[in-house]
Image 1 (cartoon, rainbow, N blue to C red):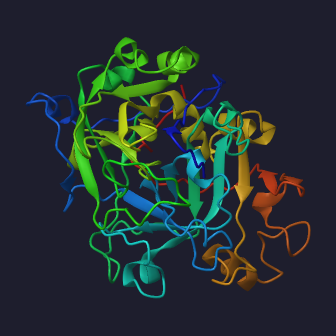
Image 2 (cartoon, rainbow, N blue to C red):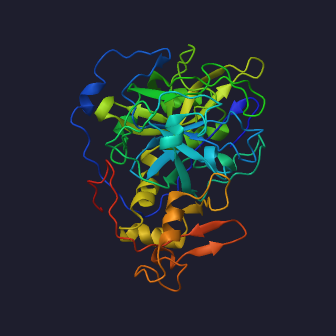
Image 3 (cartoon, rainbow, N blue to C red):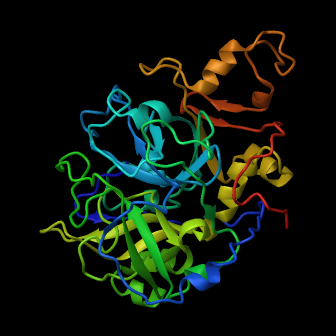
Length: 404
């Protein structure tokens, strides 16, 4: 979780490696959606149409809670067990919840006083980030932590796409991610952003007031050319912008685009069931004296990260992804254990405890499930490189995929 005093910079630099290439059957109406008037919506409140939105929430007992009480990041559901967000949001978050099914947010809400969080929040149990994303502290001049600011998180129990959770506003649904065409990033396209963050001013996560929005807000914005975008950014960032970013225009209106604490949220092409996430909210500029957010705004390209995202989801069933995860060349995984946490173990950990020692899926001793046979464990850092032979085929909007 990065704290920057005057400039928010979360960038992407992609490793081009051999990996699974997945294709998606795009919704039929996608090409028709953007033919209307191109306009900026000045922070409209969302009342429907965003069932894929989630936000991340630290547990009350988190030891960083005194300093990160108002920490907030967004994300989107891309699969029944996975969400996509920003690496900067979760790289040093030891434990956190994924909250879905609600348009409302409050800094003070938690599983003790909010029925939607109590009944529907999922515990994050595994996170994966590109290997060349390196967090090196809160040093404004360092740029290594700007590489590949994207992450995929697994939850302890699959999202239920058919049932409304008691206390929540809507049934969660996944959103398709762009793994087929870079055309959706073309300048002139009207797309949308959404989030619970502040609407115009940046305040760092420690010292800022409680300015997060109570309700989810959205805005429509226009993608601009890379050349126009680079005029407002220093030359050291031009190569990254050229190759790995989506830029949207600075329109100079309150909540015209992203500001503080909207990180990890989606840049979306289309609406409703035709929505496709094409970017992850990554960067904006902030005026030093006024703390006003301005652009051009930068978004991590989902298309440039399509191999990473696809292999995270399909690592258990696709040979190329299995080999890639075994090598550990492109990514870093971390298992998040809740066994000794004040909030209790995650549901997957409860299931492991209940398994009898004679379970046919247990090999090499009663404590080692079959899907951990080839784990490479690095105790000093807590990272595990995993190879698995689980053959469960995951459900996702992009599962009409094939190896190419």
